[in-house]
Length: 238
Ligand SMILES: [Zn+2]
Image (cartoon, protein in one colour):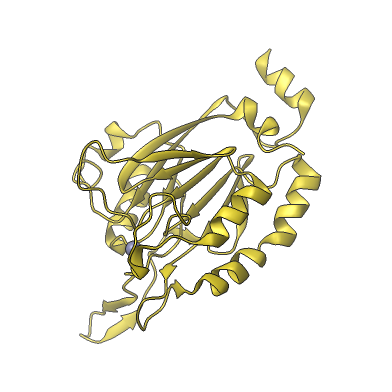
C-alpha cells in the first residue's frame, strides 16, 4: 500500500523500499570498518559516502567488502601517487569509487552532490579560496535548478570535505569553513550536508548542527544516516 502511495506521488523515481541507510566516512581509518566483520556489521548499508582524506585502499576495501556504490570527494590530503609493480610512482584514484566533485547524481531517487577540498593554505591540489569555492558551487547550479523543476527539490545530500563557514570549522586558515556552503544551503536546502576535515578529539564534541533546513554532520571516522525515502519529495520543496 505504501509503495502504491509513493508511486502515486511520483516525486522520486526508482524507489523500491522505504528506508535507505548510508555509511559516511572521512579522515581516519576506523578498525571496525576495515575488518572482515564489515560485511556483517554493515550488511544493511545501501550506499557509502566518502568525505575525503582517506587512504584509497581503505575506500577500495569498503567497496569490495560491501558491494555497494561509494560516492566521494577528495580532501586536502589526497595522495594521488601509488607505487606500481616496477617501482615507479603512478597517478591513481580509488578504484571502484565514484568522484562526485561538482556533480549532482541521482541514486535510487536520492539526489547527491559533492564539493571537494579545503581552504587554500599551501601549494597543492584540492584547495580553494573562498571565491574559487563559490565558483565551484556555481557550476552545479544548472543541474540543481533542473532537479527543482523535475523533482520539486534541488538536492537531498551535499557531501564536502570542509565544513561551512562558522559551523564545525576552525580559526586557522586550513580549518576555516567555506562561505559558499552557507549560500548553497540557503539556496538549495539540502536535507544533509555531510563533511569531514574537522577532527574530533572528544567523545562529546559537536557532530551535528542544524542550519535552517539542513542538518550539518561532521562524519569524522564514520556515521550512519538513515533516510526515509517516502519523505524525500517534501524536502526543500519550492
Ligand atoms: Zn582535510
